[in-house]
Length: 337
Image 1 (cartoon, helix red, strand yellow):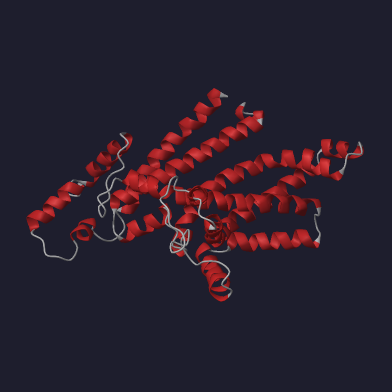
Image 2 (cartoon, rainbow, N blue to C red):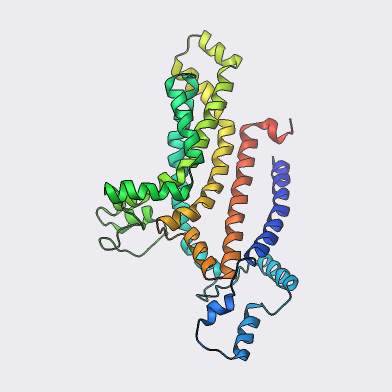
């Protein structure tokens, strides 16, 4: 098992270095000059302008900037924001709990609905329920996040007034110092009556928007895996023994069908963090995604580079963890069978 883990971990190293290069190159294709953003519109002497460029390392050749960037990353230095002069790591981990809370809530929403829905569709194969679920899942998988988010805001928040439009909590009614950064936990720790309910209320629309694509994917994968398992000999044997449908489907079939679904769920965690960029922007959710979008507008190279690399490192780590779990569940994978 240790050898299997080391092999999978070794494969992530070239991926990480490729991401370093692509991140560095892509960010510099964005039009604009970070020095102009830093100095603003006020007049400034050429000497002072040259000093700013030197401080940011922009007076060096591009190849040297890249190697300096890689060297700093290898030493744990993700840079300092051009705009706020704060360490990128500090800003990132201040905002990261909001993104984690949103992403994990969206995945939990997708799993709680997607797995049972897919399993029932497999058991009722060819029925109206099966056909309806598959049609809805195709629509959900194809739906753009920004369009779906705006549609829900107009219908649910603006017209029906069922949920708030933006933010994590009503700051007029509730205010407390963050302890963990996770609003659901901090609202409980604050002891203020109604704070947790209000935080959940603000979480509803972003979770639905971000969780729609993973939900559709998990439902389709669960259905496909269940159909394959239901045709296995051990399922027919369990039925022949007179076991109840609940035991046959829930204990024998679904348990084995979840092996590939676990992989999809793990990969969905990474994709949900990527999708959080748009979701956080639409709902003014103060997380890493919104921070990165603002960094693009401000041409904040260090914040963009550091933020993207940190998110990439987390996604790679999650995928590695999924590979390891998959190997634990299915020993044939780690033995190369």
